[in-house]
Image (cartoon, rainbow, N blue to C red):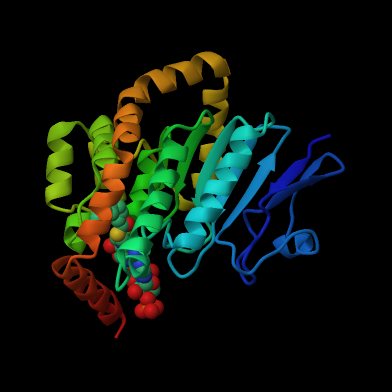
Length: 302
Ligand SMILES: CCCCCCC/C=C/C(=O)SCCNC(=O)CCNC(=O)[C@H](O)C(C)(C)COP(=O)(O)OP(=O)(O)OC[C@H]1O[C@@H](n2cnc3c(N)ncnc32)[C@H](O)[C@@H]1OP(=O)(O)O
């Protein structure tokens, strides 16, 4: 009988449950999230994970309105969910998507970097590193179902996945725009982008802090496929079946061979990277840039 296991099944009240699917009595059905609340719920959780053990596919839904920004809670939930899935023999593949309309993720929560001291910066950056590392080095097949804008840290999630499918909507943007914010992408994220786009395109993209529309992202290879928004998740599921047709052990060894150099470099420099971040982000000039950027974001609304 098909069954859906709920992992870290904590979710925020008021979030749409359209992506939650369950299988009862062997029949797949759409099933509202609130039906599970009696089992396991939390208003602080930013992430929901549904694992269908009959297919081996887990769907991780980012559900932290208004923009799925990566605050400490988000990063902690992410790391815990990844650890559970990685250890679960029933899980072979992971799809990342968003329940927040029009936004996949706005990237790191700027409030976690603004007006905070070096101790907070150290803890925060370790959690950011961990998120990237867990996803980039995952044994699972990882597919980003990018159903909204995905700047900076949002693009990081997509880049560290094995395959990227994006909603075909020219208003949605994706890219590493750190330089625009007044900060700098870390070397491991830069390396990750170089592997995807090549050196020249990465250099232009990073220096110019470029956010690409979905069609432009496809043109430069930042995403692998564009589909109508309502088909992003179903296409990710179909794509997963193709990746599952390769034996796990040989695909995993191949993946780790392809990613080893970047991972080794990251592991040997991770503490230095944390110190660099804490020193950099707490500088007055960088705080000023972050403050200006935040004010611009708020002003946009006014
Ligand atoms: C020192 C070295 C550091 C290296 C770090 C390298 C790795 C990664 C870095 C990052 O991720 S930095 C973050 C960069 N992110 C962005 O530049 C995205 C900014 N946001 C947007 O462009 C838009 O919000 C959006 C994602 C396109 C969505 O647009 P929408 O119109 O739907 O929403 P808004 O009205 O703009 O936002 C709603 C609400 O959310 C606040 N907000 C948006 N993004 C962030 C964020 N990243 N962190 C914190 N808060 C954010 C925004 O200010 C609005 O707040 P309120 O006005 O409602 O209070």
